[in-house]
Image 1 (tube, protein in one colour):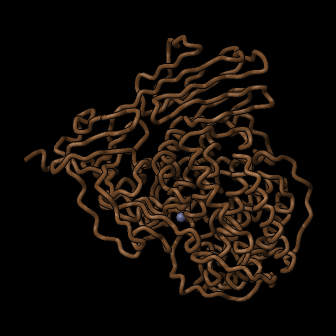
Image 2: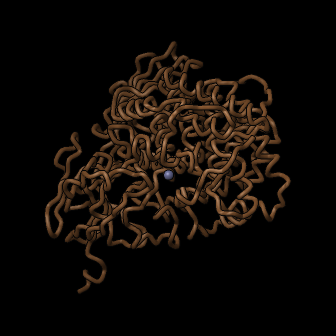
Image 3: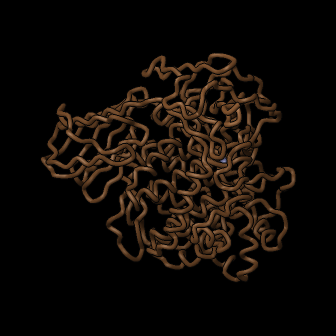
Length: 639
Ligand SMILES: [Zn+2]
């Protein structure tokens, strides 16, 4: 989220709404693919309700997140919506970016919170959180009705007028998008019909507001962050089969941003990362519902470019929230404010969409990299979330506060930790793709098929899939063989397959599957290094998909260093120098790191000054750490 001083955004007046009636929910398990033309070749994720996490590291994190969501009170969440609509409330409002004086208010309370509880309801059957979501929807319906124009927000329409007038204002469409997306998730994932009606009222208001504004002025207004307004309008069009929402979605497109990407030109330097990834997600969804391949080409080029030229070893991008350098030039960018967590959330959404078109394992490799390195590990035991993932040496993790922050990454994190099951399995026709190695059960009722994935991955280097079937059925089960493994081995019912797919592709096993069949997958991990783009002498070490971090000792314990009221702590000391390795970068398998325990994921490393213990970054808790290492540079080597 682009930051503004909260003091400069003071509360303004009240806004306006009306409900429009639509047909009832036509489905309850996922967004339809296309309004206009079916595209049966696409891989589809399974509905969240079909996949349950089994006990393990992800389930544990899902439950911590659910407890945090459960700690929030409906009346307090609704306070600013009610104040804006003129509905009385005696609740104590939350603070931070949800304070009644903050122009972003409502983004979490009526947006991310609704999405998160809808995801938790569908993904883990959490009926308490679903009821909480229903209460919020009831409260929002009352506010929208009172306003009477379709408009709904926790701030008045004045802020949109400021946008029209070119006055300084903090991203009103960004917040509007979060609320619409939360409502749409409540409809799609839990079947709350009122939520769809409210979202349609909001879409109608947005169209009525934006259509009369001239194209030039609209483009000026779109310079202010607007989240995924295009995406949510496309999704609404797909759900309702109403083209007018697609037409409104087009209003949120910026040729100045999209045209260079369509021409495969990286002009991203200077842009705010998390403002722009959602625009590409919207383009990707526009391709899916219209079939216009230009949008697909934009999305594929963007994703490839960001992942290859602008991404750190943890699978995320951005420095001080921006792309600040030419492509492939990340040297001198390691600091506290690397890798805003929202950006990972959005990149993973995009990876998932592009994978659906291409079935290319590289996108699921990238998804895994982000999942294990900058999603897992960014929530603490109280369910609080990080904002940045510092990548300079000597820094530590810091988290939002329970009731005084409500940052953008608090919101996207609350969603992420409620949907770890959404990408594990995909299908095309009756074939199943096993993308990620998370302990879980897929229950595909229509096909009479259950797949139980038993694994302690990454502490276990592989996984076991147990097939339960109502009868023999011919199908292909495809399993990702990650790019980081070598010598993968796969057994079906304890018989080793003669050939396994290359790393970085899918192994297809076609047979008549019987109830009780078992697939055992061995994915040996090894140590390897990856350079920082732009400086081959700065490298990170990985074990399998996990970036390893050197433990540099206990981090600070005082609140000023740990608690995020704004995106970063009040005081950030200078970074330490990167630990130096007395080895050449091209030395092959790293000789300077040692695997102490594969099952406990413990490692040691020799640097010039000291020996360090290492662990996967996701296991670093309160310690100070370093992910990158300084090798001898070219000059050192030749002298
Ligand atoms: Zn964020």
